[in-house]
Image (cartoon, rainbow, N blue to C red; front, side, top):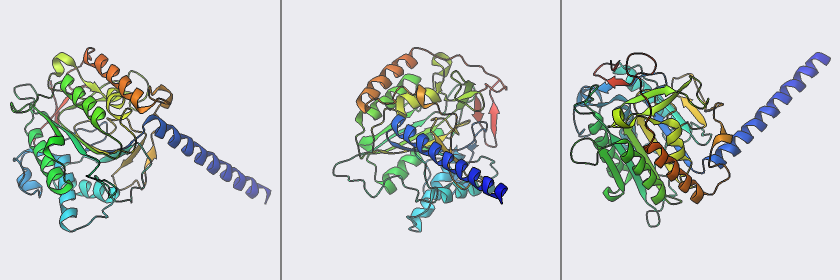
Length: 360
């Protein structure tokens, strides 16, 4: 009886300590990241993503912009359109990710969609981009959409522009976004090229323009990469990166930089959704909570590698965070990273019709 009592007391103590730790973690997350950020990515950090050679045939999208496209973007759009067509306003986050996984699996892709966030989300809650509380009379829906095909470069892609067109169509027709509040960066000769400085400037401008109560959507379709972690916050020892059009000259955009430029200084009470369709994109925004849509996970988990004490915005006002974000962004612009090309763990990868291949 004594042993059973001791075991019970120990279990209670462990449960109490776990709850205290969760509460402290949640408080630190809210302090470091004032707003509600949710990110869907097409793959684990260690996974590569895939280009689809014919989204007309493989995915059921209304009037797709072109034949090629990213598998993650196409799968999510199919799930969202299906839910819209059947009037399902209560489709949950877990349902959306698992439906994405099923669609990808049916089409022959082994990518595992992930959800990461700035808050602990009940994954059974409805998947929402524009909440019911949004007031179009006082607030704006804003978007930054980036598609890079790297035309003429080694590792050229084919579907990233189409991804942006398809996401734009969905945001406008279903979510009600307006053209004047959508920023598009593409290397198509008609839009501003998605160079490193242009991407960073677009994110800085988005933060500056966004106000409490606004809705924000960010989409990236292009190459993703990995660089050796430089501050010890990565489980796998690598920072995840976005690869801009001028990467050979300017280098990658690290996940740490995205956190400091885009996420930390975003005003409070903004509903922000990000879709990252690239290789190694699982935690490219370094958010504190994550959920893997592999069918085995049932709830979000804390990312124990998050180091809130190193967050420059902890305890600062939003205004100060924006100023700090601008300073960091300027520093990032003039400090290109060294890249390692090849088939090893530091390689950038290219999409193909069937898999993601190393650029060598």
